[in-house]
Structures are given as structure tokens and as C-alpha cells.
Length: 218
Image 1 (cartoon, rainbow, N blue to C red):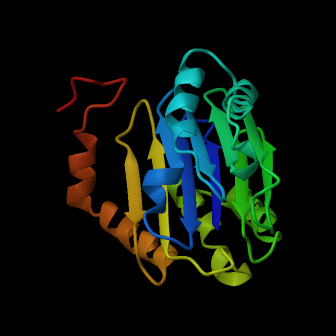
Image 2: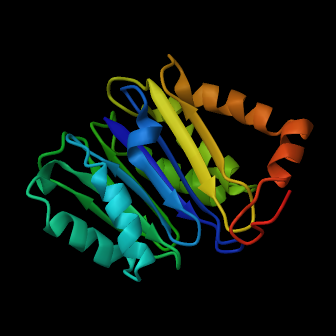
């Protein structure tokens, strides 16, 4: 049904996430990020969007990624239908894939990076996304998009993709929030939208946006 990745750039502290699915409006349901706090992708056969808001609150209060996953799933009677990956501000990651999610399903967690998928065309997708992300250079948003694009070659959602999103948040830079809520090739559309984000006038606009470490910027 859905495949996603969350990542931290250890050089900048930026946090990012990307996702694609066979249904509409995936970005608003799955991706939850807060600069300096963490990133969460919550999905599954019965997505629990409360994992996003509650998980970020736990991270903000000092929990690490594994503690957040344990707390969220431990108090959820529907956890067998959930899939969750969490990244904390120190780069720690943890995940959960309930047994009642539809195959193929798995999650992969390591320092600064976590991936998850269910109802996949092939379990080979997540390792390929991981390798692409780790081998890529450039801004975090660009590396996330490249990893997401691996689905074009290996197949992602077994139904095909219909929506996709990518987000990056930072203490020092304006957020980047790309969403395609309904399109026959949503990952390709994300790349097209990102090209508009790179336009000189829009970059000037972004540099004037207040951020946590420069709240008086104008």
C-alpha cells in the first residue's frame, strides 16, 4: 500500500521524509516532521495518524526513537494493522510492522535512516532505495527524491502509485514540502515541482522565511 523513508543529514541536522502510495493524499497522512525533534512515517493497513502528533511529542519530551515506538504501539490495540518508522534528532531510528499488514511488508532501520513498506510489489524495493539514498550526493531533499524514484524500475506499491510526497525541515533553512495528491505518475511530478522550487525568485523568497534559529529573518 505504501513505501516510505525518513532520514537525517548528520552534517546539517536536517530531517527529511518521502513516501508514495496507491491511494490519494499520502503526504498529509503519513509524514510528520519537526525541526530539531524528529521525523515519523506512520502507515499500514489501518494508518494511525495519531502516531505522528503523539510521537513527535514524545521525542520532544526526550524519548528516543525506540522508546517512542514502544510507547505508541504498546498502547494501541490495533497495532497489528500499523506500520511505523521513527527517527529522533540524534539519528536513532526504530520501526514497527504489525503482522496484519498485507505482504510484501518490511521495515529497515539504521543510524540516520529508516525505510518501511507494505503491500509491495517486491521486498527488493527497500534495499534498493537504501542503496540509492546512501550513494547519492546533494541536498537531503534531492537524495530522498532519488531514492523514491527507484520504484519506477522495481515497482513500488503493488497497485501502482497515485500520490507521493517529500519533506525536509531544518533549524536553519525554510522547510521544503512537496506533495502530489493525485496523479498517474506522482513521483515524476514531484521532480517537476522541485524544479520550480529551485527557480531563483522562489529561492530568494525561501531565504527570507523565518526559521527556528533565525526567527526575525525577513
